[in-house]
Amino acid sequence: MIERYTLPEMGDLWTDDYKFKTWLRVEIAVCEAQAELGYIPEEAVEEIKAKAKFDPKRILEIEAEVRHDVIAFLTNVNEYVGDAGRYIHLGMTSSDMLDTALSLQLVDSLQVIMTHVESLIQAIRYRAQEHRDTVMIGRSHGIHAEPITFGFKLAGWLAEMLRHRERLTHLQDAIAVGKISGAVGTYANIDPKIEALACQNLGLRPDTASTQVLSRDIHADFMNALALLGASIERFAVEIRNLQRTDVLEVEEFFSKKQKGSSAMPHKRNPIRSERLTGMARLLRGNAMAALENVALWHERDISHSSVERVAFPDSCILTHFMLVETTELIKNLLVYPENMARNMNVYGGVVFSQGVLLALVDKGLAREEAYAIVQSCAHQAWNTDDGNFRGLIEADEQVTAHLSQAEIDLCFSPDRHLRNLDQVYQRLGI
Image (tube, rainbow, N blue to C red):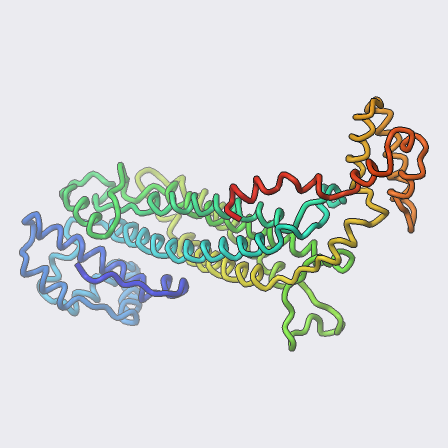
């Protein structure tokens, strides 16, 4: 076996040089299996391993003539190997090597992605712990609802990323599949034991029942997982964008000393990272759709999927890697403004505590509809007035004060009741 070649950066995993290295790994793994089972001489394999090389420029030169990338690659390798090269690719079809090598690239790419998923998980966990008691308003439909904490919001993000880690862990096994079964997958010219040995040596498992290619549902699974991860990152980014709006300004992307937000307006501090992430998530979804369309090939194979994958796989893997790095830095350096959160929560005199007043009145014996009408009237009066004061209106309402004492009203306007059970969520997440 040749030594496994790995590189630290995602972009390097999708260069021509790395691709050809994986091709050569597959071809040599098959040669080793052939020799182990006695189909080719051991000394020929040793000669192949000692001499096998390639020149990406030369491969492209040959491909320009023969119009076949695998033949061009094999021709170039044989220019280095010589006579022993006749044992390379013996009994194989192009897709045996291409699909198995692609699996190696996807496994390596997923390993990089998993590393950065873990970094993002830790960044979110740290900020959630930091702000577990930072009270802010929760919103539904974009409208103020009831108090939460910023740590609780981040806890939801953390739970989501933990689910992604679980999905991707499963995917590491699902994508680690190879096929060395020849034309249309019938093993007519190659022993199935060779496939088993070669895949084992490559860290893969043989496909259960391949055609001439690996079925593309495997690859669609991979691309959909990346698109789903991108959708979650987009959710985080959209939330940050909304919370950074001038009229909200509860959080803000870090803005460096020399950074500029607008060529025309010097005051601008725009959420450019979050907007960038939002756009990139769209590309991941588009590529996932293309991967789904690749599943339906003609009969035992065609190559309609090939042109798509040459673009979609590198782009999606590199995009996902970049998005994870960006999001991790964004979360780590996010500026949080608790004073603005407190200000926004108490706008209109604390209308967000309306349910507490409603439930207190019901507890005192009022019918729910009657209590609802009283509280809603005060809330809407406060909401539609520039200096509206919901709490003041509640405290001045005779129907309310006839049933609730001042101490009971004070309790209705305390955020503590809304936060008292959040520790259960934090404990489940280890925050």
